[in-house]
Length: 434
Image (cartoon, rainbow, N blue to C red; front, side, top):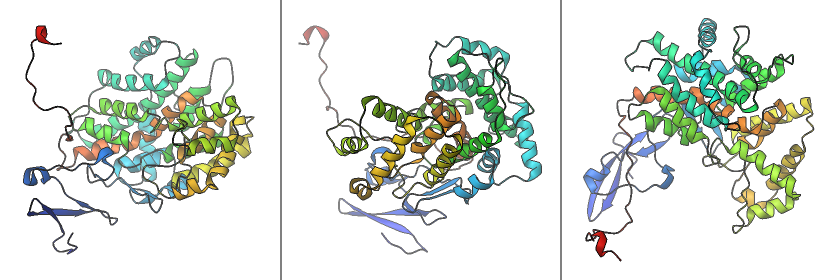
């Protein structure tokens, strides 16, 4: 590869021929070989299972350096945003590109309140789900149903209409999430109120009931803001790529977000926080020691999987996990929950971090390892953990959807494959088949 900055290029030698491939660079030093014409010029494709080394777009939203443990949103460090911002400020940052002024934040909050209600006809939808339906199933279905009740966002729409559509979705997803929980436990819905902030409203809709006095604690509201910020965006993960891929077909915003929710549901993605708690429950139920668990995790022949450790991108400590651990310790100290899983989790973390197997492979606890414990301490059931992840990730999904449609290089996503099936076969009539 040539490194002449005035004429950056890569040279590919194939079948006795040389091909010049354009080099493209990001603002933080990343470089990539542009393969847009690879097949047409060489007759070959790139083979990259899982797209681990493939950049599918240019993006100005989030920067991740997995080797150094860096996470920036629009240039701001995640630690600074968690420490100094509310969730709606970070949502505004991701969607609009800058942190809001006080006036912009107040206007954004006003729109979130105005559009927090669901169409009353949608209430009947919740009643048709079976008892025990997973809240993520309800969430994804209800979000795509929004397109039947609210106008689709046209790409040529004005800024004000864009703001209304975006805030409508941000606000209504919170209401849908709370309603899906109430449905799962057979309690009446609690409507949003203009009296409360974004996270305060959500907690009130979740935990208030006609037979108990509930007022969201200021501490819990602050923790919810921080947790949602931690999940607000994370570059081209599976769910964000799903949003972009579905969006590349011209599908409406609601359908794209529903696709992202479905992708997030997987235990290897957003469902990992629920999977961590379920793993800890199994350890408790089976009476396993921490040493036994670590031994099982290191045994390639054992189907047991240690959830909450390692990350596809981070090869150093996940910066979100550092923050989540601090939050977890603070919440546990304040709440002092009588939760047997806490001691197991902390002992497991300590034991794993001292083991050379995990050290050599740089398998550190990730953000999912801690957030489930925090949510439990705040009173959330494990079935709601991934819903909370989706609520936090929504502004990132919206930002990527918008950016995708403003990208002049964007095409319908259509990956290739290496076919490994049989070659052409003679057709055999059914009566002659043996």
